[in-house]
Image (tube, rainbow, N blue to C red; front, side, top):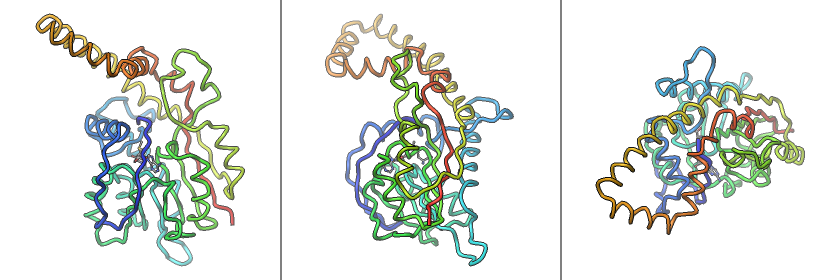
Length: 316
Ligand SMILES: C[S@@+](CC[C@H](N)C(=O)[O-])C[C@H]1O[C@@H](n2cnc3c(N)ncnc32)[C@H](O)[C@@H]1O
C-alpha cells in the first residue's frame, strides 16, 4: 500500500530460519503500522468490483478478490500429464497470507521477504504448514541464491512487490530460476506517461517502475507477455477510502488535539513543535504535501499510476 524498500540478506530454512537482528527501517515501519492499524493480513490493494460497496468493512473481501485474481493467473495446481505439484515462489510475500493460501490450495510454494518484522509473521503463519517443505528466503530478491533454485519454479509471483526491485536485477534472476515454459505473474502499479509533469499531485504517490521502461526491459530478456490487464479502476477506490479517512477523520482529529494542547499546555507544546520542526522540518514538509494537501486522491492516482496484472511466459 505504501511504497517500500528493504535491504536485508541471507536465506534460511523454515521453520528454523535464523532470526535477523537488523533494525526496522522506516519503510518496513510504514507497512507494519499500516497493517496493524487497518487490521488486515494483506499488504496490497483491494479489488473493488461494482457489487462490493466501498468501506473498511469490505476491505478484507476486496483484498481477497485481488488475491484470487492473482492465484487464478498461475498455472494449475498440478501438471495434468505428470501429476506433479506446481512450484511457485511468492517474491516479497509480506505477512505470508498469499503464501499460506497457495499451500492450502495444493501448490508447492516458497516465500521470500527481506523485512525481518514481516518474516517473523510469515514464520508464525507457516507453523500450520510445517508438514510441507516450504522454504522462506529472508533476503532481497536481488540477493536470491540462484544456484539453489536453478530452473526450479513453474511460476514466480510478485504481489505489489515488483516495484521495489530494479528490473535490470529481477529479470536475469527470474530467467534462471523459472523453468522454460513457466510463468511470472506481476500484479503492481507502474508510472504512467504523466509522471514528472509537475502538475499538482505529481509527487503525491511514490513508487512504481515506468510502464514504458518495463516493456523495453522485457524485450531484453527471454520472456513473452501473455496477458496485460489494466485494473487501475478496480484498485483505485482503495485510495478514495484512505483519502477520505485521512481528510475527514485524521485531519480534524489532529486539529482538535493541536488546539487542546495549544490552549492547555502552550509552552511545552510550542517547544515540542519547534524541536520537531528543527530536526524533521524537511521531512514533515514533504509528508504534509504528500498526505495533507488534498492531492492524494483517486483521480490523481489514476493519472500517475497504472495498476497491471501481467502474465509472462519464460521462453524455452
Ligand atoms: C506492499 S508489500 C506486498 C506484500 C505481499 N506481497 C502482499 O501482497 O500482501 C511489499 C513487499 O515487498 C517486499 N520487498 C521490498 N523490497 C524487496 C526486495 N528488494 N526484494 C524482495 N521483496 C521486497 C516487502 O518486504 C514486502 O513484503
